[in-house]
Amino acid sequence: MRAPRPNRYRTHWAGELRADEVGKHLRVAGWVHRRRDHGGLIFIDVRDRTGLLQLVFRPEEAPEAHAAAGNLRAEDVITVSGELVRRDEGAVNPDLPTGEVELVAAELEQLADAETPPFQIDEDDPVGEELRLRYRYLDLRKERMRDQMILRHEVIREIRNQLSDEGYLEIETPIMTRSTPEGARDFLVPSRLVRGSWYALPQSPQLFKQLLMVGGYERYFQIARCFRDEDFRADRQPEFTQLDMELSFVEEEDVFDVVDRLLQRVLAIGGVELSLPLERITYDEAMLRYGSDRPDRRLGVEIVDITEIFRASELNIFREAPVVRALKTSGEFPRSRFDSLTEKAQALGAKGLAWAVVEEGGAWRSPIAKRLTDEEVARANDALNAREGDAILIVADEPEVAARVLGALRPEVAEGEPEGHDVFWVVDFPAFEWNEDEGRWEAVHHPFTSPAGDLSAEPGTWRARAYDVVFDGWEIGGGSIRNSDPEVQRKIFELLGIGPEEAQARFGFLLEALTYGAPPHGGVAFGIDRIVALLAGAASIRDVIAFPKAASGVDPLTGAPAPVDQRQLDELGVKVVAPPDSR
Ligand code: ASP
Image (cartoon, rainbow, N blue to C red; front, side, top):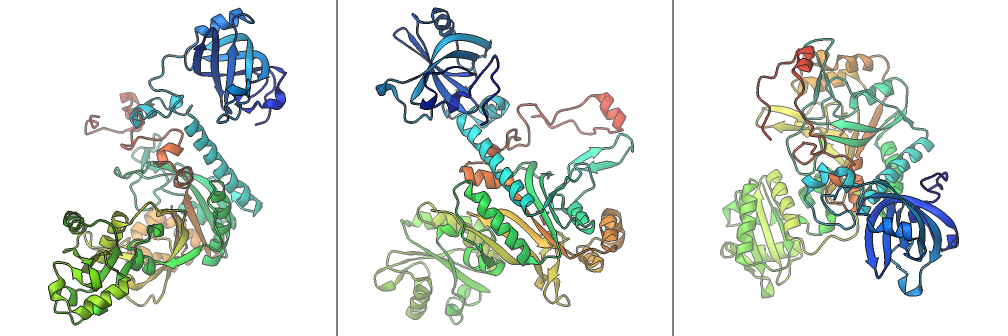
């Protein structure tokens, strides 16, 4: 950090003092991190944003400061002056950057008193998250939190530097706007001036970035806050931060090109080395081999299609199944483990789970073994590369069910912890999915994604010009080439069951803009919270957000969301019909 302007509080950063400053008289300020009384001497570790420095208070040399130090408690705020000295050889602390030196205190002034904190700042004491969030300003004082906030800053700074260097403009888009469909529920803000009308908070800047392309700003980015009112799901936040980007006159390759270089630099901040170009796998391959469109490939275990081997099998469930797919793994597999995996498979919609343990000579110990021929078993072993002692899990079902079930079982049966990192693109997604429950088509990415393939064929076969980036089993970003032709955009709305009137009402401004000369364009967005959490090895994105909501959506610090005065509601013309949920 740049040296502070010397003032009455400090002349130096405490955590940045090293042996080359020994002999200087200086002043530091910060919080009492820890106090130890030692046969007349008092040692205090003082903490500022840069780290810790040991202060020594000697009764003979500075009786007043020593007496005052005796009354200090953890987290009191102080300023201290004195001489920086080298520590005695035996007292050097190699774990502390300032561990070779200490400040012999001459003068101490207490600037603020601290209540006893509800948890310890000086150790990673396992306190409940609710309490950490309730006193977030204390939690943020912890070294680990400080390091994560610094990492977050570094990531965002690198993004801004790199994209600015490449000529991208950072442009803000509105927070109070109209609904942008990313597939979640909107947060709404009532308008006082236009009663009965509402702003929506943006689920993403999607439509505005497309309008910026129509406006001629061919390279755009934004560190954008997005808002999605989703039901509780592990590790989601109702507001989160995206790196949002859009480019004009581009194809997929242009997006991959800039993103590859950007990710290489950004992930390097967290020590993750990428070799470029990032690998690309198709959606179909991801689903076939890993049963997921954001697989953690480091788990090793892969799904193998063994349908053909059983086309003439005596076992009906194999012979007649649309597909037969299997996983091979090793490890301890008592019967009870197969039973619990079977339960899990059924909960995920499979009719059942067949299993086998490979015995000496390749024979299967399995409830279905009697119904299979030696040749079928031998060919399956071959396809799976299975040897004595291996366990095999088989699902015979619709392809989607086999993928979903085996994809979910992969992490359960994988051996050992995944090592290293794996970052790659998934490309060539389907464009639409049939929603059984609602009896209609849904866009797999979003309605603004350009379709590809034979558009005269059934929409379920259309591909999307969409792409995602996967990092260690997490989807960290995704985007697409857009519909720049208003006719295509209209047709897609229609297909999605958004009739011309509704399309006009909700997206008329976009459709109109597309008629004024829209360049071909496409872009991508990345979840910054997730990227930082992965780089920090944090358990949750909440750990890398300064003031997150708790998992329930509530902010224990401010108490938001909170009731408002009747007067405010009256002004807005809003009537609350149900009592608020009791918390
Ligand atoms: N708007 C999309 C999202 O938030 C990203 C994109 O298509 O650029 O997921």
